[in-house]
Image (cartoon, rainbow, N blue to C red; front, side, top):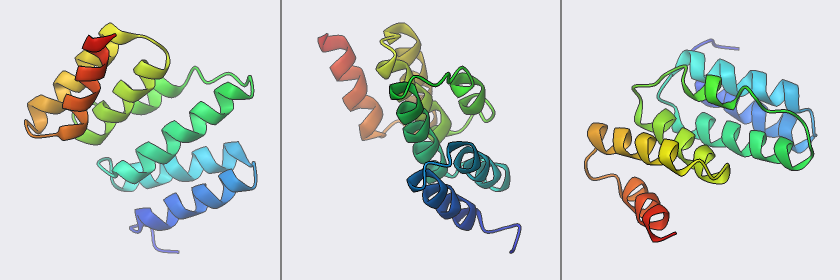
Length: 120
């Protein structure tokens, strides 16, 4: 398997996740992010995986570490912001969405999330 096809690793992560092989899934998403630190699909899938694990009572203390691996990317800041919203850590989520807007001033998702936070 080519080491440069991040989408292959992300796809394997999805397969492992559907088979409830969560550690294997996380490992594949991380491989995809090693190849392409800006690969938003892998961030999104990893965040979903961590949320599923949280619902099942498994510890997910690694979520901040995972998304801070590449702090300057739009995808990592956005996904970390969403993770903070789920955790009701609104100050931290606002900070992440503001970072997204510094990188991409027209990011509609960041504006939407900020609006939802300020409304609460």
